Length: 265
Image 1 (cartoon, rainbow, N blue to C red):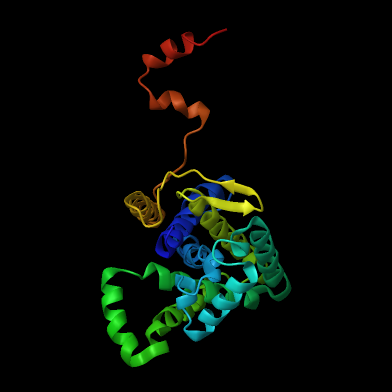
Image 2 (image 1 turned 135 degrees about the vertical axis):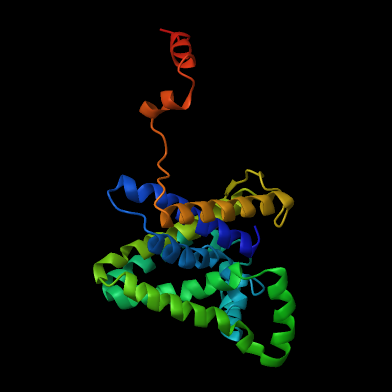
């Protein structure tokens, strides 16, 4: 998948999962939680691509992130190698949980700030963005990417207000892990698949090649899903999934007894 596709898929995974998981755990999936979470998750969904200097995450911070990407690529053995393995996901998850555990609120805000900047850079890549970016980059160089960090700073201040308790930042480590995992799943759905561990490749080519029309359709569906879920949260509309006990209500009453009677035993 392309960088923007990974970012959107990660954000949609967080938004949909949180909207249904939190109510089941006795919490309310507020618009603030949905929005605040999908921003850094979009950035974490780019994390495995830090092994490629041309990736969205490598382009987000000028020569600093490009240098990190070049070093990561050499150390990991190239693109879609070490940083795309399951062990790298586990190491990153352990690091994120350690940061929010040891440093609490400030550690969480630091992670939130960095990954929100990464996600903003990827999500903003539209035709208009590319056209303006070329002209702006010629005259401003590194400053052409500054907007994503300014936005990340504003979003981090919002998160500072929404999540005041140090103990409440565990959710961010979980969110970043979800975003990272969505990247691996997304790459596994392409033609080349993904080697999660040495000698163990998963390939379910539902999306075809990276950047294909099918991938674009998935990205569009994810955007629509996020808009519907967040709008439903804003307007207080319940999106609870049906249980087995609810299924009869989803079918015409006359069909339920007949279907039940046709079952063996």
